[in-house]
Image (cartoon, rainbow, N blue to C red):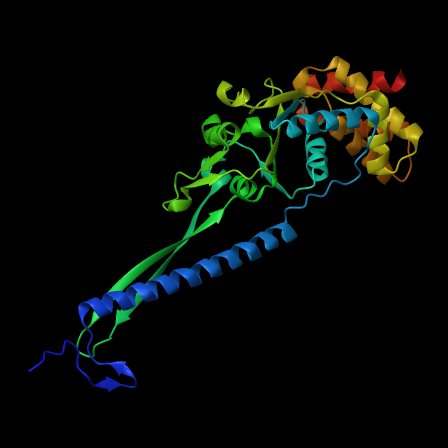
Length: 343
């Protein structure tokens, strides 16, 4: 009598019994097919995700950008160092136009742009991403009617944040207010800028390390160190980037910026900028009004029904009063505004 390892009967074209070797081979085949299908699905989902990202929020809008020789010279310097392969750190006082310059330069580089706005609450996870949810999947195997096999699978979904998106797809990263983030959160940038590798320390898979895309660029902006809420970045990170110090624009450039943002006549814009620059010479570094203050005053002036000198004085006082520390300080600034308007 010849021993037959499998029962010859079939049910709907399938064998009722299989040897362990046959079961293992079938599982291996099914597993390989499943991996191939998952790989194709992953590639399609990645492509769709990248298209959705680029189509939705990665294109920054820079309104009323004024292109003067002074501004162009700064943009060309940023592009020079980007082309040389270095991230650029733009440093300067509040309201001097750092963010607008960085965003417009990033757009002109021709790659999608991602944005990070730094503050003390920013963590490494906010930069690279993390797991957003857990999904529980139950599998019940009833291949043989009298054998019950159960298995619970936990699936987690990883969501990429701006730094990971920029490194993975070759986007331009604009890190605004970089020095307001705690230095420990920015340690992740060391390997990105030096070795071209982004490590995802909280991700448990083969994708823990990402090779930085060759089109990846980074432009960072910071206030000068004397401003409140600013942390000095670690020297090891500063050594891996180029610093570009930016001061307030010239009189003519600032006048053009005010006109572009407000629609005022040149005479009115010149009067506003003249007073703002006079206040900068009298006030300390952290209290100096920037170009943003000139634009705010211009918009207030545009909204007036009548342009009386007394009303203009109040506009100046209202805008610069935001950095007032005491009644005596307020009276001093009020007198400075009056003197500048008379001069």
